[in-house]
Length: 266
Image (cartoon, rainbow, N blue to C red; front, side, top):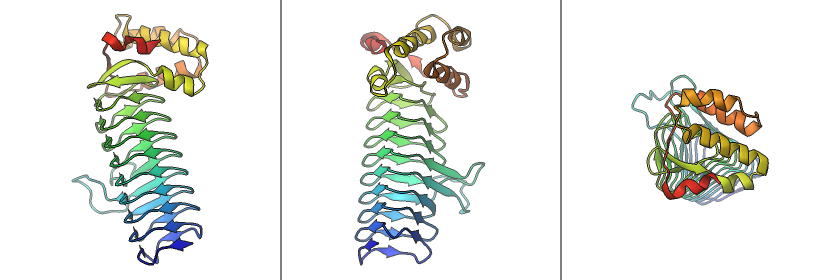
């Protein structure tokens, strides 16, 4: 174990022998850290926080602090972080609030860039990118490989679908369907064609998703009218998830914003 002499580590914390801790880092009671994780200078790890292997926690991060919830009563709540994540400078990740499920969850191989934030009870999947200054309010769900660009804002209880792309500065309080790109406020402009190709989705399945997008957004139908037509399509894994996500939405989904961005559906 490599621990800088200025680091402050509670004797109740549990650190794997391969963990590295930098200058002036603080690791408090109840924190558990898995193999090969690196904790940078001035990072603060607190609360009932369980961190898996091979994570990188950079300068000034605050991981596991109490939720920013006026109803929080100080009781035991949790943060669970998987493997291979990167938390860059001054990222803040809060543990859950004491209501229903009391846990904030982050999967594997996510990248939180400087000054990003995930609030209490967020559920973040695998391979998610949260760019500089992006803010996720409490109870937000982000599915695998979504990309949340710089200075985006996500309202509480909102869901961001698989391989969705939020363009820089966009903001949502409605659900973002899988594979879509957001613009402005609660708008989608098309499919994340580049992300789908990079994820290895076949040309045939990308063409079916394009058809599904046009049925949902460009066919003059409301969601309840579009769903039967979507269910009549060939049920590839992508189409099935697209339908499941939309049908389960409680907040409603983002609307279509056309114009110059319509080519994103190609």
